[in-house]
Amino acid sequence: MFNKNLASAHNLDKTCMYNHSRSLFHIPKHQNEDCIYFCGNSLGLQPKSVRSFIEQELHDWETLGVEGHFQGKNPWFGYHHFLTESAARLVGALPHEVVVMNSLTVNLHLMMVSFYRPTKERYKIIIEGGAFPSDLYAVQTQAAFHGFDPADAIIELKPRERRILFTKRRYFSRH
Image (cartoon, rainbow, N blue to C red; front, side):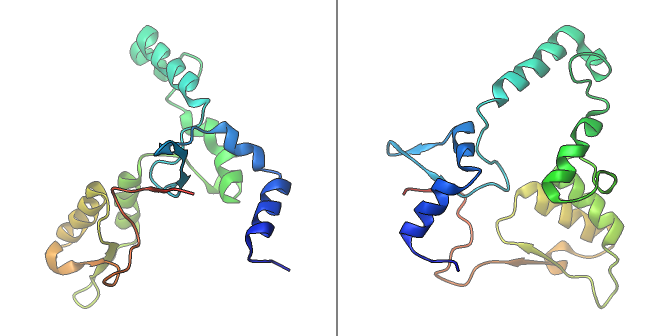
C-alpha cells in the first residue's frame, strides 16, 4: 500500500535503487539551496560527465574538421547507430522501433508532414500556449502550407485564470 506522507517518501528515497543518481548531476541553487528541478522536457539537469564528452567532440572538430563525420572517437555521420540501444531501453521499445535524429522542431515538421491531413472541416491544430517559438513556427508553417490561415487554424491552450501549467522564468522550486 502506498502511503502519502513525508516519512514514507523519505523511506522510499533511502531504499530506491536509483538514489545514487542525484550525485551524477549538477543541481542548480536558488538562494544558496539546492533546487527541486522540474524542467526535464527541455533542458534537464546537466550530467557531471557531460563536459568531458563535449570536450572530446570539440577536439575532434578542431583536429579533424569535416572528417569528424567519419573519423574521431565517435564519428558523427552514424551517431544514431551509437544511440539506438540506449534510446530503445529508455523508452521501452525494441531497437528497430527507434531512431535518434534531428531536433524537436524538425521532428514536429516531419510528424506533421506524415500525419496532418487537414480538410475544410477538420484543420485545427492544438498547441500549448507559450510553446517554444520554433515549435509554434513549425505548426504555423504546416497550417499555411496546407492553405489555412495560422491565426484561424491554431488553437493555443492556456491554463484557466489563476492556474499555472508552466512558468518560463522559474523552472525550479525551493525545498
